[in-house]
Length: 482
Image 1 (cartoon, rainbow, N blue to C red):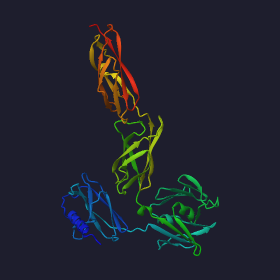
Image 2 (tube, rainbow, N blue to C red):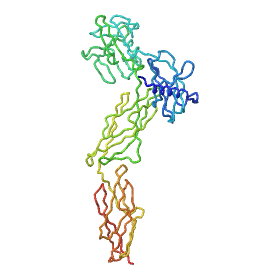
Image 3 (cartoon, one colour):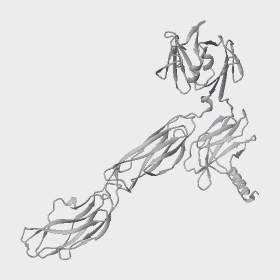
Image 4 (cartoon, rainbow, N blue to C red):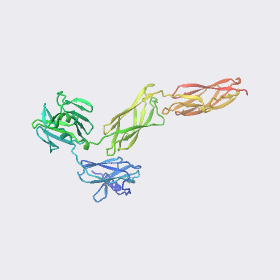
């Protein structure tokens, strides 16, 4: 049974978004591109600052627009499917902010769906000049022939039907160079049974070394079909009844999305850490940039094979050419990591274009206890403290400094002193110190009555950190004549 309330809400939202007026320049507030496909058109647009969602619209014959989907989307691409091949379709995208207010729209873009036969089927018959490409007849100026159980023919009648494939003839070397759409380079020489493929020498006929060399006939270069077909990534069949070879090649230029590359840079934090304590975590940022030129499809990124990585945000995203995205990675030092061990933190960057890159970082495991320093305040230099015999004074010239680097854990500190000693109190008695933080100590002491003028007297108390061991510290005060 259909939920009529849901249907009514959906229709209301469609009408709401289609009726919201918005003014825009002729060029548009942000840019839209339309890529025709077979019975579909792929729309992609640049993001607009302040926009949360986008609604694609198609123009109707009377010039009005109608939303293609019920609800706005938060991506930058949309595919309009089920279209008529060769018919004009025009579009624009409207951007909405968080309050569902239209804040901008793109330029108007028109195009026609175009169906391309992605599988190119070529048929060549021994002794016949006529050949077929997707069942359409063509004529060559020489006939294929069999030599040493292999078919030879003028290879330009193959390569010219495969988009993106080129062929060149170098007379001085009697050499043919074929470059495929994917960039593979194949070089063959007349009367040479070896060929060069991407710089490496190979036998043209591995089953019969020394055979398969191209040759000249009537000023045309005859080339072994199977060898070239294999390196064009063709599926090759032989029909013995008709002496026909059938090649099936994919049109990668018109059918496969163009894949290109991206760049990765570090977003350096204020403190670049080299070590972590067991169980400690630290976040780091990377910036991804889609370096594809305009006209390429968006790259979709996702991550896998996380090792000692607890979080990656966002965990998947798409980038249009020229766009960038910063991700945050959280390193987590294993709790069982041994002291001074080098631990690898890594993850893999994957894209829908086949990228599979490992990003790794080595950090050293250190003790969870960092160094703290009890010292006279640096700004006081080598100040000396003088106290009269039997006098009680409060000294605020000393401090406790957390010498741990950024990213380390805080230190929880508790102070204590002997009941019968010359240190009467120290405050604050307990506190927390962040890495690189300093805390002034207020130390109340009583100089012994029997001290002699100029005598150096030691005062002691205990510093106990929850993360570290208990230590006794001391400082010196001098007895003065009073």
